[in-house]
Length: 116
Image 1 (cartoon, rainbow, N blue to C red):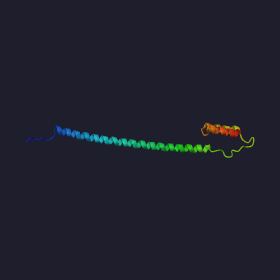
Image 2 (cartoon, helix red, strand yellow):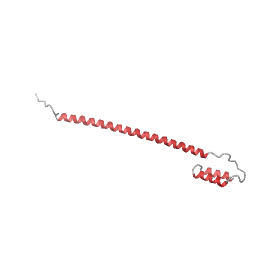
Image 3 (cartoon, one colour):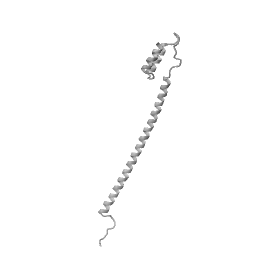
Image 4 (cartoon, rainbow, N blue to C red):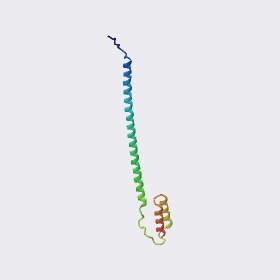
């Protein structure tokens, strides 16, 4: 009958234990890495959502501001001679065009209406 050694494991037992430890470490490492990637993706998605919300607010504010300044002036009927300060009106139109509120075509039409 062979004599069994008690105490330290043999070569095969040591190799098996090392394989189990290495396999467990690999599985845990993969799980941790996957969890970190999912967390990073979630954070990136949240940041993109917040950026889209901010951009939507900026766009809405810009549209509201453009609508406020682009409304036609009430009572644009021709005034009696000497009643309208043409220079001041042309300067207003020029500043609206420079600010990007009026296009070149709108500026030209408004100028023609004032001078015509």
